[in-house]
Length: 426
Image (cartoon, helix red, strand yellow):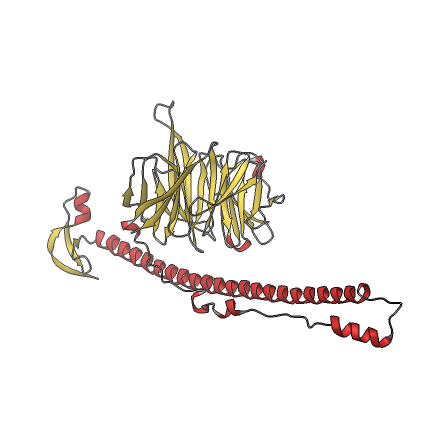
């Protein structure tokens, strides 16, 4: 990787205002370093390569997971349509039986009320039955199903991946609420949001189809989606609830208990893991298992001046956390507030990366190494090192955002009452 070469100033020493000659050239970047900084430079290259290989591993896993998810969707589509065909056939059988009963009833009525029983003899009775005995006319019409083009009933399309460094937004809808919108969460095709503290509303990606869920449990603090249960998790300061998408039923998870009567503030769920954070300094992260809602572990990660503001699962290996930290200024009178962006190992909670002075209100995980973060006056895409890759400013004030599916961004504006729907493209 490195070879000895003619003397020139070491670039690292130069940034430190030191005039040390570089005597070893890096074969990758062709820069010349001193004997001390060439080691640090090689270490940085190794770390970069390690990140590249890690990203490649995550990409392979995500691709395999996507393939499995699509195959599962095909299986579910097949089962749904087989069940629909079975139900249609069963209704046809029931209709035949109804027609048979009607014919028997009509025949009996004609026989009993259409003749003089006193004057009847056996021969007359036989003749009467023959006259009213008409064949039941039933015809099966399945021509409509014969003309179904089954090859177009389900199709597979290759999605063009978004280039997040070239990201653009196209507004497709917006609507306002009379009351303040507190929390939001999305499935692949539905948005759930709190309309004040009395209703939850479920809408599609266009914001047009709305279903109302009555809510009588106070102000919502956060929401997240549990895909394998087909349920939303909604938290207030004191309780955790699940909302069934199909039935719109709401149930309180009574087994989920607060730590030392602290107030819940944020949550996120991935696969079998639910994490709950508190809006109080030195509060833990509580981990629960979603299969039976059993408590798993209480993670003590933050200092006496820190609390977790936002949790987001990135993949099966990593977790992103926004931490708010309080400190006093040098004069001792001013309270300073600073956000820190952290990436942690989700199994051990070991801190892997930390970005200080993270001046954003919330963030959305987009891909292995891209995040969409919300500022007061802009939307910004960041790389894994916290560098700004794309700044999307529309002259509006933003408060919060969620991602519906892979390409629909829903933004809550500054007044906390308006939601704007955007299509993401590049």
